[in-house]
Length: 184
Image 1 (tube, rainbow, N blue to C red):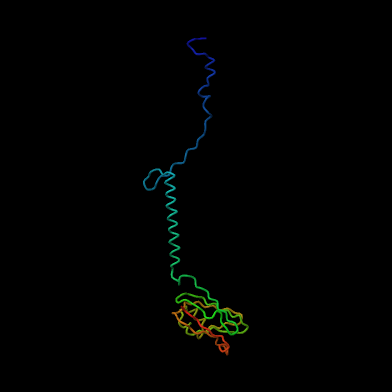
Image 2: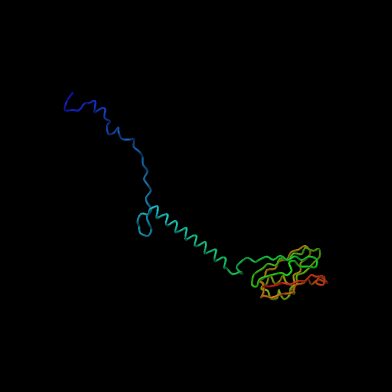
């Protein structure tokens, strides 16, 4: 063996540089970091979270404001309340009919009897606000309701007061088919 040269066996025993490297790993490039629209700097995950939270807070504030606005909207913008009034043999139910001034209602008149009745409240209908179409359903302050039928009229309740109510058919008022409409 040559003393100037290390042993060939040692060279063979040492792994070569190519043999000691792990096999080549294919690496995907990381997606580029988003850039802040305000300052042009790279945006971190923390900044994204802060921006997300600000958006969530803004959305909550918007929803809260919408709920508050809806709750204080004027009554006329809301759906009308339906008041069902039953006309039976010689009585109205409920009696008295209770309404709130300025609120919009649909009076649903239901005749549960085997004979005809009407809902006569001249002063009430004269003082109530109605469209011309609705007013055409009221004849001389009354609405005729045939047996087993339903009639509806939409109106805004007039100023506070008590209004007389009756069935104008022969002897029906005498038999007790009368009442009142109270507007608070």
